[in-house]
Image 1 (cartoon, helix red, strand yellow):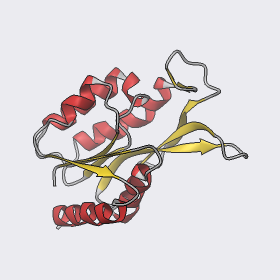
Image 2 (tube, one colour):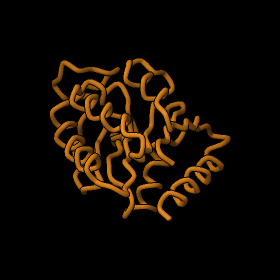
Image 3 (cartoon, helix red, strand yellow):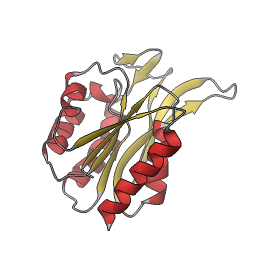
Length: 177
């Protein structure tokens, strides 16, 4: 296992899978994931970033004031970079850990610093990475990443997610042994 990319439609379970990986392999992973924030009526109102360094913050919200917008969400790039970049820089310099990146999507890709660190990480053939990508690739770095060597793409669906979870866990088990 070197680089696993998980793609799929929204709400299919990409982040849930990343969280399962993080929980089950907490001593072997380093990185971040994003979670939806919902209001009392269950309406999605933003996104929170959480890291394996036990830091978290809201980085996208309908209430933020930002020029970076995806749909109805305004993205706080400074907050995103403040949490994501340190954990990814640490991952770059740490051996025998799997880097977790959820997600390489529109919101995160407003950050040029994030793009630069992605390019570094994906150019190192032996650096193990598990990352999520949206189905629709709109940014050149997304298209570049899927063409790198040692990349395996898993298209997660409601029908195959249990099977793919087992396959990805098997790859991780082989790596950590």
